[in-house]
Length: 248
View (cartoon, rainbow, N blue to C red):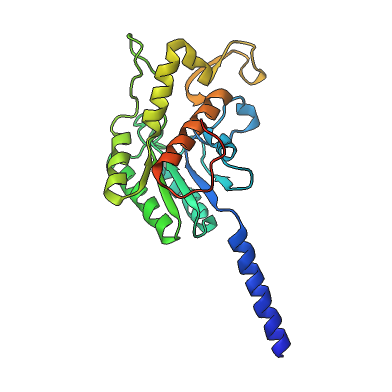
């Protein structure tokens, strides 16, 4: 009997050691701007698809649960948030980026009033902390909108500022993707920024035979750039993460 007990203790110790050796996971909760795309949507690309490339090989695992068209409200209602929590282990990081769909008042299937948006984000933060993991709040990425003078126009109303205020109040790490992405678009300019988004001429891609001019969703080039912007901001944030592999 002692040998059986000893063997069981050894197995448990080995299992615990194996779990400790596993790299932490970065979980992504968000919308279409960071989500993995279906084949029929390509070359549309979410910036979360390039996240793993910002780290040294094997340093992290990425669990991208972002989904097109989701707001904080629908992400909860569909059980996506509870499923993400079940997969979250102590030491993991959870990125929370919503706003595009929450502020779409013309789309009642996804719209989330500002007060509910804040409550949902606060719940996400508390839930992640309860799992002994690290929440990181992100403001929504900018849409490609310019005024007549060529300046980037904000398009998310009060929602980004609500994220900033909550992050300050709850002492949560904040990655201000709205401001960083707006700076990228401003630098690229009205014409140059088209290459960062899903702009295709008729016949240029089989999925968009009539062409497309999408100022919300990224091209592979745009998604990769936004992932590098995120990595640069994460490096500056003070969040403890495995070594980032390259500079943006």
